[in-house]
Amino acid sequence: MNKYHTIIAGAGPAGLACAAILAKSGRRVLVLERNNRVGPKVCAGGITWAGISGRIPNDLIEKSFPDQHVSTVWQKTIISEDVPLVSTVNREALGNWMLDRALDAGAEVRVSSPLTDISGDSLKSGTDSFHFQYLVGADGSTSCVRRQLAIPVSSAGAGINYFIPGDYPAMHWHLDDRLFNNGYAWIFPHNGQASVGAYACRSSLPPALLKKNFHIWAEKHGINLEQSRLTSALVNYDFRGWRFGNRFLVGDAAGLASALTGEGIYPAIVSGEEAARTIIDPGHDNIVMDKLLARHHLHRRIAAITAKNKVACRMTMEFLVMALRLKIIPFKVLEMAS
Image (cartoon, rainbow, N blue to C red; front, side, top):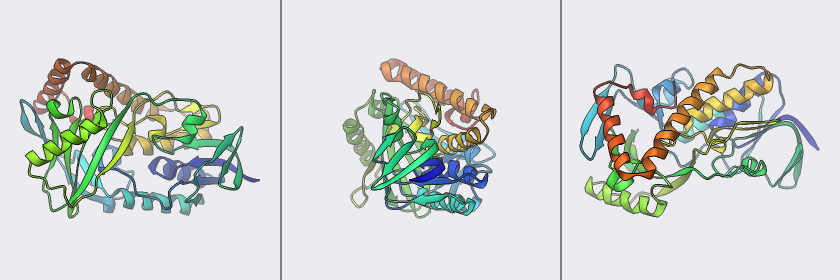
């Protein structure tokens, strides 16, 4: 049986961030990725500036926006800062860069290797068996490791996304509660194309209705989707812990995506890093993780309040945008970074 210090399920940002730190510290690390290559994922590619600053190289940034165009039923405004508020990245390019870092540190990465069984401190992937001291579930919203821990996913959102060709100059957020309840539609420009899509909590808007309403919104705004492919994803924000003895959950597997915005890249990277540091040093001060969780809980509370009542949803969204416009509260209230 192959023996590893840590086995990580999933080669997304969370798993690769974790693998790079562990391998660099001299641990023997194996990353098992169920897909046939690293990188691709249903993702709008938007990430807050505070989250990426110092964590990824500038050449991975496609476009950055100090101005955010925000619309609600009653308001239309531009929220501006001196530095970029949100940038866009190519999800596959980010994944490949993180893969190279993990490999250079000495981690072993296997693709087309889904977990088929976990028993005690051993697991199987296909016909191969492995033993681990630590197991990290970084395998997304439908995590096998989370299921093995008997942790359900009850609170989640749905996101749909298209990439459409064209050069789009501005980043837009459309908080139209008539179509998306406490969710929103977006236009996130990339190089030569834009991500357009919508996100909403499943408890407030079923995915089929989200898709129908998004197409109504797209037609209203003159966005042609006929030549673009629809992709969709479950957004897990049902956080119930991340440390379980010698097992860890990180990123979407832990339910760390924002309930309010659906953002998952930054919390994935941070939780992967913090899991690695905690495995190396069980006494590690988790102040960074604590800050991430505080912001996560705030977003989840706002989402829960606005999902239950249409009046509360409308008033909360309108107040939030007005407060952002008047700079009563900072834009970072929407960010998972702090």
